[in-house]
Image (tube, rainbow, N blue to C red; front, top):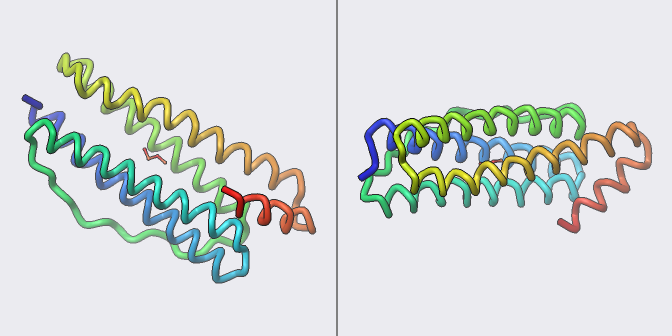
Length: 160
Ligand code: OFO
């Protein structure tokens, strides 16, 4: 049986994952609006991934016979001056998510909740990947500046 402290924390994480999904969907819409199809596509894929992350928690709570609680999602920003601004915000956000996942792990360890620790290991690995991906794009964007290289990266990201 899952503890109420663990359950509350996992339900809060569903909200955090859905907020991430909204943030990336908003970035995708902003880039679409500005004619950056590749950046828009990359963030649309990211939006879908975050939705999957939320569903993975939701399914797990149900598997453990807990009650899923869906809270309202707070509004997300709507516009970013440059692709670099958006990716820097995405990375800062992912670092925050990493600390949320680590907090969940701390609770699971304290409570000797081995099943939840197993679930969370997947998210710990996923965060390494998320941070790495955002950082790699930031590095490229910094190298090319605002010139034609931006068009090249936009084209590249469409392949995701
Ligand atoms: Fe972007 O990360 Fe979810 O968990």
